[in-house]
Length: 570
Image: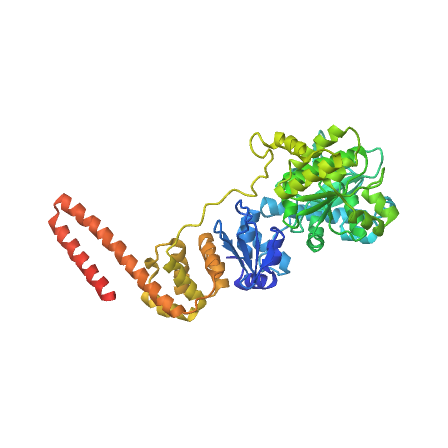
């Protein structure tokens, strides 16, 4: 392995597994451990357990388990070196490995390096452009906010970025594939020109794309975003989430806004739980992404007709994702950015305290009563929580002044034909249930982890071939070779072995481990003898059918020896 064990241990010591997994899974503390819905298979009741004491995770539903490296490899679909580099950066650990040029490495690594270099170019360009800085100042985005959100500027030139990246070792074709250059009749040219640049980060804090806002009012489109690439899918990324996730957990809710500047202005005014989609409507993927951190959403969109329509559509999508949604109602003609800058933090906070339920939001739009009812029922039909759905039905019937039965009847028309009309997709493909393993094999491994000093004694009695389960056999082999610590075993085991180790390690220690160990060794030996006797009996029958009497005598002798051995051991 090109990385030292010392580096692996240092990374594990610096990164708490609960903190890491909380970036991906909504965890709740239960006793000494934390639990949540497993990200590796579909489930409704949490069976995914994280142990801060042992720094491991295990799902008792699908059997997945391991340490911080295992989790990141499986969740992000990374190679181990990719996960190691990512965690090393998070932990602030320098990996002792030959330096590579920025333009080398795998495709994803090259794209990430290129985007880091492009951001450096854009930020330098902003520092040297008075017009761009003046525009940001006019929008209330001062030097501090520009620094925090790493804002930049794309110069009004055809190949400024291309030339810069070329000097860093990137070919024009690669820059084009990254979406940072386009190809015309005369060759390649920069995608972003004369625009304020908003870097877009993924949850790990890597720049994966850019958004560009034109400075010239006549330039179209007003906003231009990077195209999708192997490192960027706009349906799975929310602007500002990498900065907002801590605040979202602390406040217990998230503010969904429409644009980059809305989010930045909200953060400047201490509403640091604000995020926004990237020039597209909210999607189921966005809902699943935010559900890792909270189940409570407040939609804060513009108060014009387009904003109201977008809020209604967003609520429907978020309800489908199993989230609880409210809407902040801004005064007519206002947007979040303008309201915050003109009225201030306290006024916005008061509006937030009086955010509307989705039924109140529908009712305040006015208009035809029947149309309002249909639109509200459409939204209610998306609600996954039946209790909450019932509350909305009651609320709507009271607001409309009609019997609750009639609202329920209309709701059934939408959901009653084929069960629920809208279903939240499973978060991942279901994994098969963990295989059944003889308990005595599990217990032997558990006791050796509990009492590593017994490893030598047990190794003199058992061999790895005594274990029927392949994962248990592999773990026992490593223990016999001298690796007895859980952390070291996790580093040296394969996937199935790590799954088993995490399952075993989350169980309580035995009160009488030596007695249990003796009983399990005896049971293992008995079962192995039983299997051998069954195999010999089958061979005896075959020899009788073939009339091979020499073989039959030898088999019967072997059978007798095994029976005597069993009698002695009993």
